[in-house]
Amino acid sequence: MIKTFEDKKEEQVEAHSDALSFDSLGLSEPLLKAIAYHGYKHPSAIQAKAIPLIMNGDDVMAAAQTGTGKTASFALPILESLLTKKQSSQRQTTVLILTPTRELAAQILASLETYGKYVSIRTAVVFGGVNINPQKNKLKNGVEILVATPGRLLDLYRQKAIRFDDLDTFVLDEADRMLDMGFIHDIRKVISLLPKNRQTLLFSATFSNDIRKLAKSIIKNPTEVSVTPRNTAAATIAQAVYNVKKSQKSALLSHLVSQHSWEQVLVFTKTKHGANRLTDYLKEAGLKSMAIHGNKSQSARTKALADFKKNKIRILIATDIASRGLDIDQLPHVVNYDLPYVAEDYVHRIGRTGRAGASGEAISLVSADEAKLLAAIQRLIKQEIPIKTCNSFKFEKDDKKGSDQRRFFRKRSKKSHSDKFRR
Image 1 (cartoon, rainbow, N blue to C red):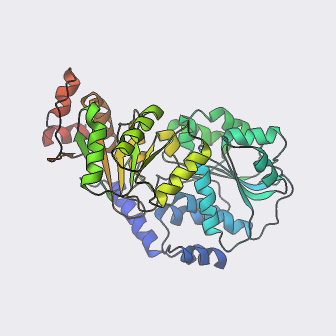
Image 2: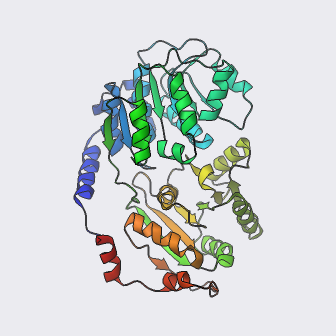
Image 3: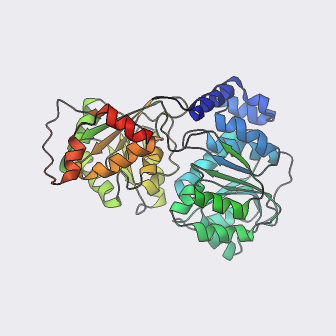
């Protein structure tokens, strides 16, 4: 692939961040000690650019894809600022981090605990789907950092369990996903409750027109940081497609996992029912599997993720909504059992592997009726995903009729493909 000016500029940013050390960013000894304890040596590009700005008190708009170290880029400077501030009062918080899903909220809290290992700062996470009373009790004496999903936060506010008089930093994380999930009205309600004199940080995978419109209404003169090209997959991810009849997808997935001895595989399905059916199939095939989706209780989702991280289960099957915020160190394999309806979600999905410089593999099982979805993904990422086959698996001919099928199985010429992307 020909490198553009933006690609080259991105490589320069990455190289610059590799030359930096965390202590050059002005972080205090307790934070540097925690960073060293967990084996981190150099800040990522987003960390190198965002941390000094946030520590300076600037309002920041940052574009950062999954797996770029985004959470640490706001967690570290927030923890640094709290080292010199007094504790929050009863039912108050100094920092509010708003995020779209339970899993991502829990992951952010885990990151705060990682980097705050040697500091005494009170944190809490609140989200729906669980008893509200323990959360109210947690907030009674106040916390310095509150991580929350919008609906539960508003419930707690209405019940007078939380107030925002002491708040001086507001973080809106995964802003693009917030809008996709229809949280815009809840976001505006939350913002209306916050002090106008505050630091605001907005993080998003992309700066769409809707994101810019939202930012304009909540941030005055932000500093914009963008270190990740829009809608691109990490170069460390090896992508491939298997052409397979829809009814054979489960069998092919089982075969690939067994044949290649994959020990940890994250699988994406379009629907909750599809996730459940696939889980049952894989269990019958002797492969330890569990599903996480919106119909699962929070305790079940938490247990499934914990077991997956500990390699107690081999395959975790997730829908897009439930998967947001999944953070699994050095996950080797991601499988798109179904292609997503929205092409951008493909980038988010496969970004669960190939993180922090590690290599990963992203496999898509594509039936003929998904031809248009595959074409949309390849247009978005501006590359053709290689088609693979498996000689030890007996593929059946896809009997779907129509022009989509003919286009899907026809091998594209390199000339027509490159011409299409130059236009």
